[in-house]
Image 1: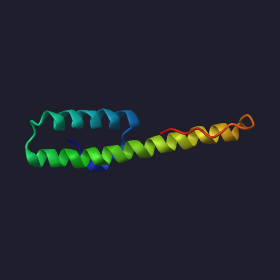
Image 2: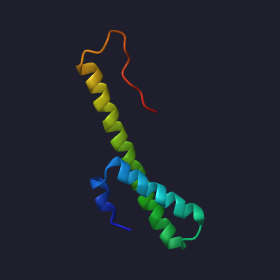
Image 3: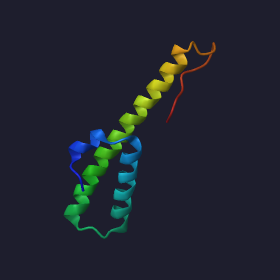
Image 4: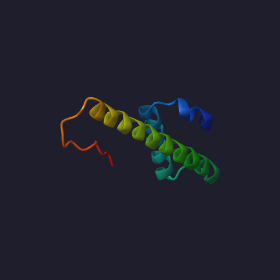
Length: 80
């Protein structure tokens, strides 16, 4: 597995794919305890990275809608 510092360079899609692989390995129960802990830590970092990327995308979309003058009465997009 790669070092945690490289998470910042991952796209949302790359981070999500790696997170899905980690979840699958953890759910299989086949990894030794220490490996499971390392994978869980990386998974938590990947999750945080994905959430940050999603929030940035949400803000960009909101900026586009507001910046384009958006139709009156239109609420900013909410992604939850």
